[in-house]
Length: 222
Image (cartoon, one colour):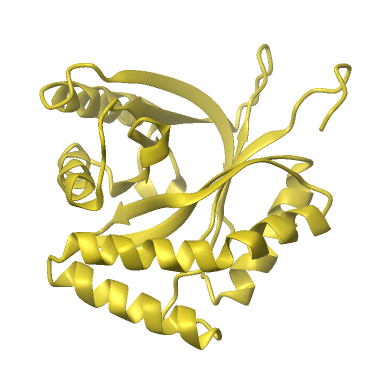
């Protein structure tokens, strides 16, 4: 952890071990089964398999960050993304350390599990600015968000111009969307689409709260 005199270098990390080509035969099989269940509309079963995948790799992910000298602030394996009609097991993970070390650890984990890319979002400290900063939208639904419900939310998000979202059920139903290069969207376009998402979600979750924060986002291909 940084001392009080040192600025925090907190990052949020998007990485998964789910891959049908994973060299780990157990994870590869779980991933194939998960994808089949999701495509068949058996979302609860797909969600259970997603949790098996992330639970299997949780300790490995933590150890990888620690080996690179990165402090794990929070790591929960019960998270997932829904993008382009597919479920992606994920981690709700926040770490503290130099960006290069965070990137090295996430990339090592990703390569080991045959991933194509990882996402690193460095949180800007109060008063800090960077011309490369991008926005990230967080919506806390204040509701239970099983996979079946997340599918509905993801469709709504997609209708507003995004590709999908990441869900952290244990954070009171948190939904996160980052302004990544894959969106092919201007900053103004992101803000407009984000406002539309919030407006539509309020019709379903009247008690929701929102937050918009600036990050330095990297999505390197592995």
